[in-house]
Length: 68
Image 1: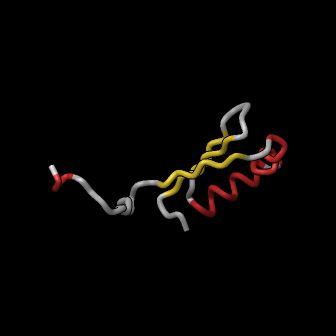
Image 2: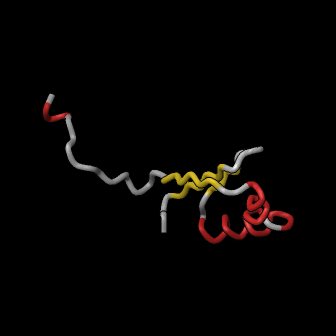
Image 3: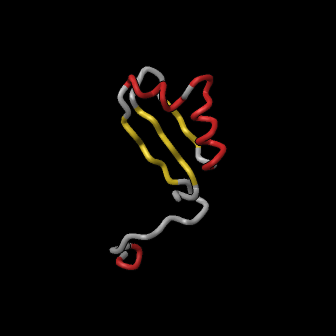
């Protein structure tokens, strides 16, 4: 049993996306999206990240394989 217990932190495999949860003021969500979605489209194109904005909420999830 002791062999199965890991006492030190381990890094995720390089192909597992990391997820960041961000709380954003409701009046700022529109700035993330931008006019016609232009800002969020640019973010997605430049970073290969996935962004999910939860409807009627101030929660934004950003996930990507390469956090840089």
